[in-house]
Image (cartoon, rainbow, N blue to C red; front, side, top):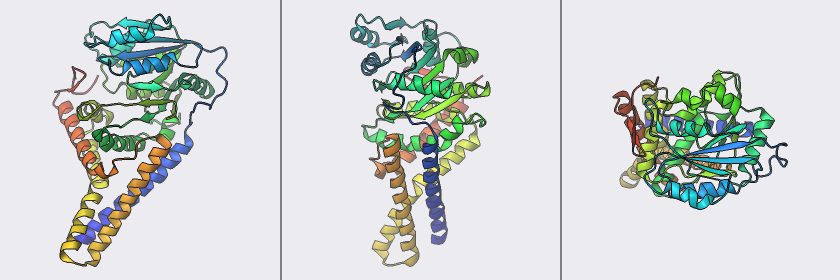
Length: 393
C-alpha cells in the first residue's frame, strides 16, 4: 500500500515540475508590458472609449475612475454604465468626475429579455462610444498611468484585434490567499498564453477585467449582442475573435493593472461558481477529471506528509514511510517554488501556501456547485441576480 502511495506522490512531483517548466516557457514566449515598454505613444493617438459596467460598485468604482482620469493618454473617453445599482455607485462617479468632460455616466436600462447583466451593460455603453478602440474594464481594477498608452501601442505593434492582459491579483484576506492563487495556476495551465497568441491554434482565452478591442473587429463579430446570454463572456468573445480570423493577443502586464476580483469567501464561491463549469464547455467528464486532479496534486501530498510523519513519530522508524515523507516534502517544496515564481512573474501573492489543501477542497466544492446547479438548470447567483443554468444557446 505504501509503495502505491509513493508512486502516486512521485507522479504528482513530476507533474508539478513539468508544469513549472512549461509555465516558465510560456511566460518567456508572450509579450510583457511595463510603463516604459513603448516610449512613444501612437501618433496620431486613436480615440479609446473605456466602458465600465458598474453594478453596486460604490466601494470600488472610485479608485478605478481616479486611475482612469490619471491616464497618460491624450485621446480618451470614459463611459460608466450604472447597471441598476442599489447603492451610491452613480453618486461616487459624479463626485469624482466633477466637470471632466471625458467622463459620461449612463443610467442603465432594465435588463432586456434574453440578456445577462454584464453583456447588457457593456452593450449599452458601446452605443455611446466613438472610439477606434473599445476598452472594457471591470470596476474593481486600478490602472497605472501608462496602462492605456502601453496597451494601445502594443495592440498597434502586434496588429491585435483584441488585446487582453495578465494583471496583478490582490489577495488581502485569508480566503483569497488560500483560493485565488491556486485558481490562477490552474488557468495558466488550462489556457496557455503562447497558444492563445498563436493564430494557428484554436486555444482562446481573455482576461475579462481588461479587454481592448479594435472597434471594427468588435462590430464584425457582433459585439456583446452576439453573446447576450453567455456567462463567461470574455472567453466566448476571445473564441469568436479567433474563429473569425481576427488577431488575439495576450500580454503579461502586472505592473500596469491590479485587481481584487472577489472580496471574501461568499464572493469567491458565487463568482467562480458561475464560471467554472461553463469554462469547461459543460463537459461532465472534464469536471470530474479536474476534481480528481485538484485533489491529487494539491491535497494528497499534504495529507500523506502529515500521516507519514505522525506514523513515524508514534510507531518508530520505517524505511518506506520515511521515503514517502521525503517525497511528499520534495513535492511541497516544488509547490512553494511554483508559488514563488508566480509571485515574481505574475505578481500573485505567495503567502498562504500552507492553506493550499483547504483552498483546493473549496475549489472542488465550487466546481461541484457550478456543475450541479448548471446541469439541473438552477443557475448561480451573482450581484443579486440569478444566472440561468443549462446549456447556452
